[in-house]
Length: 393
Ligand code: NIG
Ligand code: FE
View 1 (cartoon, rainbow, N blue to C red):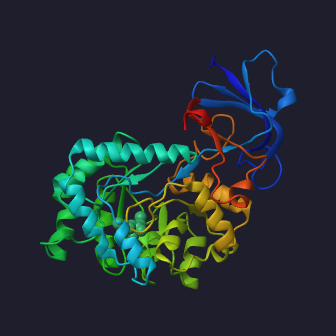
View 2 (cartoon, protein in one colour):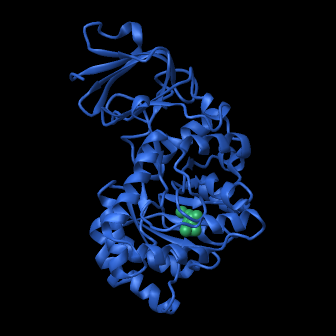
């Protein structure tokens, strides 16, 4: 398309800026968007668009900001469908399953890992994701963690060093924490923006997590944390103490955790795919939102606890199972994810923002939850370029 160009005939446009339209999502009906280069130049009623600008007519479809998947584990090899099948017949989810994926990942070639990651990145695009975070955590040696992050960096700038996913076999916990804070950190630094730790039963305790996160922060990485997924613990409080961008999972929270999150800049990133696939109780989204905490929704795509790339599924689960309103779920899957990555250039359709948009085969975004399991993604634009259209799928 020529530059600038416009999208017009938008039945319902979610801007996520209440000053631009109706309600908390700033919805504009019969809207148009002007794109210049990789940015949004203007949004408003279609009748106010300069008629001489080249335009794509979206024929009354809804347009939303591209989904921001702020939590995924995309670099891995192997398959754990048998573990899933066992869970569905009564086994419970254990952190130790991670070791199966670690063995397969170490044995995979760079090309095999890269190809698998690319497939998942393409799946994310088909689900309307325009920005995603991804982690290491299935290598757990200096060389394998550094390799995972180098491959991750080929696909996104939002890369997270998760050497502290679990203590691998053959090394004691103290020695492993030293490695994660020392030589492994040195090797991973250049390909990572974030540092993360799985602070939970069967993984790392709060003191170990604090040591790991502060070591990374001292070298310029930003903290985020897997917290309170398998049981109640101090992970959420640690996230707030360290001003982590996000506390992820938040499945087991007490009132003090909710108050702490509400009084902080730390986003509660909820991952309902993990509760769905491990048959666990869903997190208390309503209590978090009502207390004033920021909530994000993400896929947690990984081979163990949530093997899905579908952000529309997360929206549907959040609405149906967690009692979030459709507006709240849409915000959390877009602007909420951006906040969990401390980004202001994505998750909104406002002048100056990156031109990341999704058109839906639906008249409004409510259909994402109203029509669960139905692929409604029509077209996806990333940085002003059409990343995919329905015809290519
Ligand atoms: O976010 N909680 C830790 N890590 C992943 C699961 C990893 C796995 O089971 O392979 C998660 O759920
Ligand atoms: Fe995770």
